Length: 279
Image 1: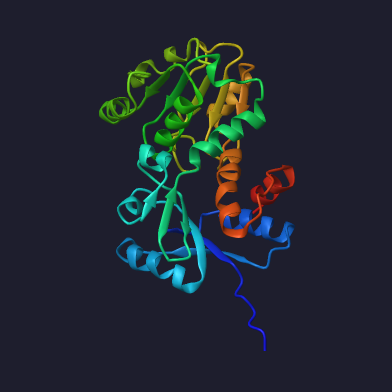
Image 2 (image 1 turned 45 degrees about the vertical axis):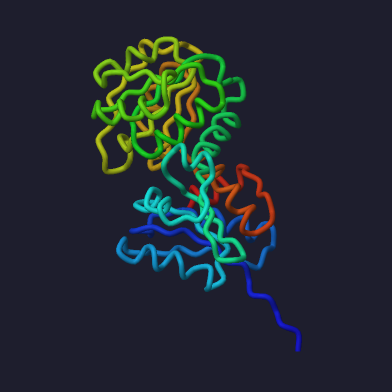
């Protein structure tokens, strides 16, 4: 009797995990490409994280995505780390090697850039400075991606000044720290304006930001996608600016992981976007 190989397994690990749309996203691709595999949401309490992750390769998992609160924790556990994950200080994508070792990568920056390029193809990293609002984990990935792509200056505004100063120290002279109260003024001359905070998300207060200083051809991005049109994006659109919502980043950051685990490079398109939004 011929042994039938087990189906490829991947998943997303977090605590809590019920909010994640990644199972819908990857499930759509598995169905589209007729891959007999599974992508499973896995809730691990923080105290169980290391044991849980190390057990997954033995259970047949080829890798997982990581979400809150594990993106930074994994770096001390991984056997090898990509340069970009090391630079950012966090990982969101794990690949389990055949010997059970763990490779950690960060695809958030890739997802951000691909989302902007697909939604605003006229934007170029070298077209001018970027204004980034926020200094958390997502901001680190986005600042890293912008600098690597060739943005001449990143202006960074955060409510807690010390966090912005830490990112400036980490990324160097091309990052300029901006006082929170002067964030709107710092939009002057910026080619791209990005909200990386949770402000504007369902259940959170809105981001108080004015676009009166923004250049007329500026691209405005909000990585929040619940709601799809935040007040931040709505105000930008009312000023005639080109807006990019947060769904594209979610979709594009998933591509490298899916390709590593299932052997097919998936396509991001309107059908996928609609599937994820309707979930």
